[in-house]
Image (tube, rainbow, N blue to C red):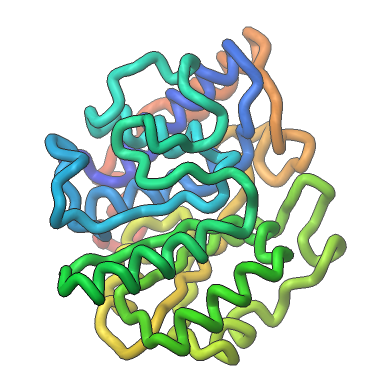
Length: 271
């Protein structure tokens, strides 16, 4: 199994190479890549050789416009063999490894609630993780689902918020302020952790800390939209776009392989 740093790097390369062929939601795909890399290698009970394994944990990508980021990770794991350019721009459960069709923002957490409650009623030891964008928390349906999950004490449900602070219209705090976001989740009865969403060791630790406890949990992961591509990082103009030849060369150069031991050393030996 790849180290999550290497998995994320390779997945980002796939996304930027794809963006040289067609327009994609580049910023949204790149901001969550480290989160997905940790989840699929350390956070989920998952078998890439059997994506339909009945005892697997489930992942719902609520921020469906980031589909190519999910596809890229699944392709690196060997779950998806198709040319990513041929796959739909929002997750479809016709794609191997994709648990639910999403795209209408604000619906993934409701889907996750149903999956988590269904697993409990069926007596299955199964966790459900829902990856949401922060901008989609503007949708009231998220907070109805949050209330439902707390009421039913869904301890097998985890939300991961890709808190990159940008949405299509600009800064989330200017469009429809979310802060104090952690306090809002706590007020709805959720256990809360926060982490640097690009530090795979910190993400791993945060998810482990949320594993045991009563009721649903949320990880607020602080990320950078467009992470890994310098000219796209933090720029809302790259919410969606395509790369020309020079931009592709620049992006691939930035994503050239750093040695994992060097990353570990920079983190004080933690991997």
